[in-house]
Length: 102
Image 1 (tube, rainbow, N blue to C red):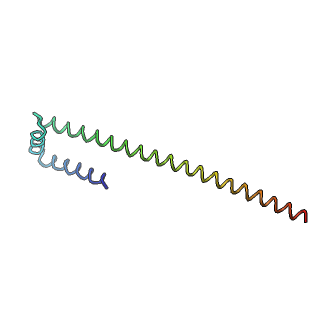
Image 2 (cartoon, one colour):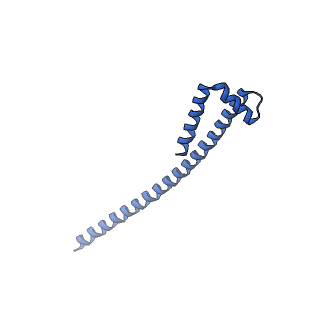
Image 3 (cartoon, rainbow, N blue to C red):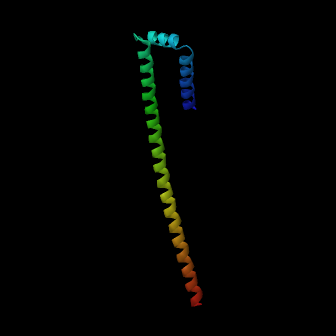
């Protein structure tokens, strides 16, 4: 949800820059204290890229942690299933031996 708002804001700013580029970039440069409007736009774009990279990096770390937990849980579940199958086979073999003895 947050990502959708970030992208929506990004594209709104791009649209405004496309419609009234000089007025918007000049006002942005004045607010940020830049002498040139193109410097302000480049600075904002680089800041957006850095923040986006940090956000994606944190999401990637989160996904890696979740994947590791999932793989570990699957390995434990598979181990339990194999142990139960082994016990079932042993019980069946014991049952056959009891029937053969009778």
